[in-house]
Length: 392
Image: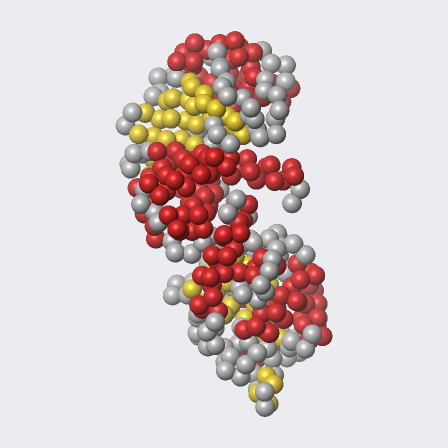
């Protein structure tokens, strides 16, 4: 991941951490909207609404008010459009080595007179705003560095009764994941949550979320190690029906690694005669890519059953058990395209359903199935979590 991508993700993570901070400070029944009316966070309580924006500039060495013109104009636009509303506008900002930032009528008028072409339309919409009236309901705070905010949130979780030994690798990353998941909901009503509901949701979770967000946290190593321990119990069982769906879109080196990954799984978890449940791999790839992977597996002496004795797919052929000659099975796995998998009717559900990579499994019946989502972007991390290697 390049430095610019690092800083982009860190900016989102800072916003998620600031949201978590607001959640943990709120009253139990206060309604928090992730990415609310003025973009980032909204907290509604009996006292009114607090609309929050977060701007994190870790690499911006020199501060000038113009850096904040866009969020200030956005807030003034909303203020102008909602006269009489009980809304307080708060801007959280971080710049290195800047202990305090003041916003007065001078800075706001500077934003309204800006010649920045990217702000032209927004400035036109804000024309005529009551600057003095806006200042009465506006405040700005300089926020701590990312690491400090993360540590504060961890301490807040402990203060809310979460086990100190589990905060770092279980509750904190899952709290960030809940907020990240809410932030992408299209319906604003689905992005609302109360502190009480959030904490209840968090307390029910017993497995660590693995995604681009949790693996970008400072606790990445702990997340991987903890997830490995959580998966070990079920993966160590000999008789366990496992389905693995693999989404390649954000998986690094998918074409180079997919055959090696499948072979490593078979070598680890389906090599004994006592391993009686044939694993199923569903790949979200085009037919020609799928056929190429099947051919390459055969070349590695890992024979797949892809349900096609000739050309036409046959469920009977696909779901039959492999013939066994001495210690050699006719085929080592079932292999199917993800689009075809979704159309199958299963007589027996999987014991474990692994989702590898970033993909949508909406519509798949996972009731009474152990669902394991491993949203990592590298096969070496996935293999480590699944106990197929000892390093990543």
